[in-house]
Length: 255
Image (cartoon, helix red, strand yellow):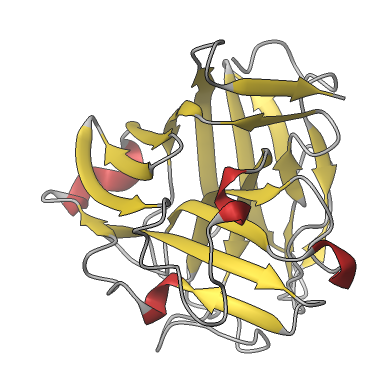
């Protein structure tokens, strides 16, 4: 729960887990604050035409977990150039060549869309030179959820869920299961490059970002980059993030 007037530093911290080459990162109250029992992340345009936003809000070095059901109630920006996300990384350095493959689990990303979000999975290894992307084995259409009434979407809270056990991952919007992937021996991720799914069975930490697309990034959606015509600010509100676990089968780790 996001109560009080600032982030609970026992649970959350800020970290540079994404790197926007145009925007300036600033974790001041201008871009990041707790108000009205919400976490409020904001992208702003400065008088000189540049952009400012906060670093990731994360449980890195605070908490990680393995298996369970994670749920977020939030009001996301579904609009041109917006790139809000809820994602997770394995709780170890995936740039370290000696530790093998590490998982990235993108529970949701909005790619400059007025009505749609997507789930994504990645495997990183060999000092970042190795990369397995779910887009090679599962179409974006299969991994996406499209809202039927997008006109009021930016003013609405919705519930985003992620269920994870030893066999599968499941992705939900408002209780509706829209995507499932196996992470056992039958997983489509098993390949010549990556012949098991061990990385998807390690503790992960939670990450929130309110980013924007610019043409300086390595990848951006077609016609999806920020322009001077895009209205500011871009707001991302989080009412709560809750984790439910069976203590006999699932684990949580505090730093």
